[in-house]
Image (cartoon, rainbow, N blue to C red; front, side):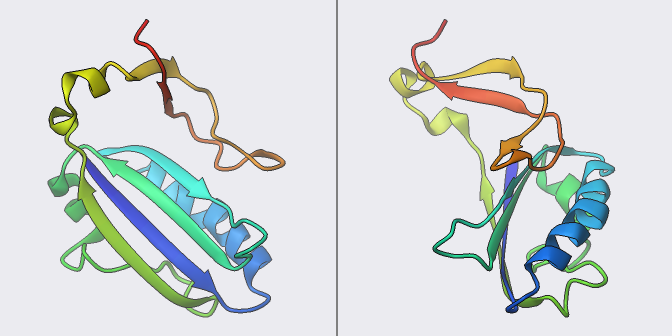
Length: 138
């Protein structure tokens, strides 16, 4: 699986408009993509009020490329976002659980579909996700 980590630093005063755009445009766009497994939206902590992160997990690089196009290794900015974002970055990682030694694989266990992604003040993204928990294997 491929992890895509998109980070954005917003222009001052753009937080509310950006959150609306993410909820109205970005999340539905990503959810509709073939090969997108799950999505995590990280709201900023008080120390960094203008920073957001969006982590999407893809079945494979081909699925990600089908969504993002030839410039898949660059941030994908949806219409309306450019005027709100001061700077953005994107990184990609290959999730390879085989790299975990057996004793570590036992600590990482799927616990089922977790309904909605929870965040401060309620549901963050409203997306179904596979919840993974740390602890002894059941």
